[in-house]
Length: 497
Image (tube, rainbow, N blue to C red):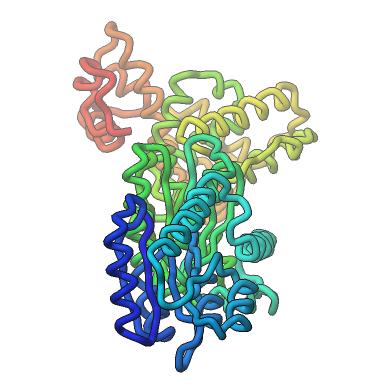
């Protein structure tokens, strides 16, 4: 159904036309509102979105042509019909040049109104069949804006053209960015229809397709909360097909950073799925990477054959699922950089491996596949590396072979002719954790394998991994995995890590 607005400075004209429309009982006519001035009509259209506007051509203040020009930038789809007298031909011609569909002479005859309604409703119905040409100028403006924003760095200053474009779109000094993504390719005509719906609902907004499954949005700060409600309703109504993100407000000059932040927020869908609107409120958490994840990466780099071990891969995936958004963003960059550096040490061209944007991954399976593919490629190119271990590598090799002994930093420093302070700092820097934490994790990993042997007692296992008594071993094991060694032996799947 199409809503109708009647604008005329004569009250009786407004009410008379409204009465005639009601008498027609046309099934496509919805709510009907009236105004006595162009200025009142503009104010009303902030909340009421008519698709049919009847406007007097000559009014005090804002005339009909000016009103058509102003509303055509706010409403879509919309059809304008001008109300005129016999001597208003000059004004009627101007109205047609500004987008009017037809005109009605006063006094308005019922048969003329019926004819106009048929023309207008046919045209509006045609809009829904062919949305592409609609708001052509606005779509072109949006495409230019988002193309420039996507090329800018997060801290780059937008060009005067971009800032002027945002000003022309009525986006003020502060704005927010939003994104909508689909689980599957999104036909362009569907994207255009969705963007038109945004333009129907908001006056201070720009939207543009980013790709076959994504729409980017910038809105004035005054519309942020309303846009949030709109996006929440949209993603909930589509039954797990879409997700959306929306940033907090910031100065419009930071639009490129806001758009990038909206992309980061949408990475939460990798963990929590679709049918949600993700905002800054959901993005909190620590940025630090879990020591065990760093340890696993170090092990993979040191011993690439471990990548094919299903237990190690499962442990890696489990740690990935624990990450907060800040930690995920940091780890994704850390992972790709680490593999590039490690592979360059072997003389291999790992940089040829394509690294997708985290934002472009659709689900957690895609993320894990990227990690596994990267590790497997590294394993292949590292099969026979010409590698000459440095001092820290030799220290680690010794610890890996003698973990069950009474190792201390002091004894290692003496063995490798290093100062205690240098060894402590270098080990932490190289392997991303203190020596004692690394030794504990190494012992516990071996303990997990030994506990699978029912022929070994807890005391025997404790001795084999470097503990003098079962009590200290059990306490360390429970601190690491959340269950006692005996409990793990009875239920190997029930651990915290």
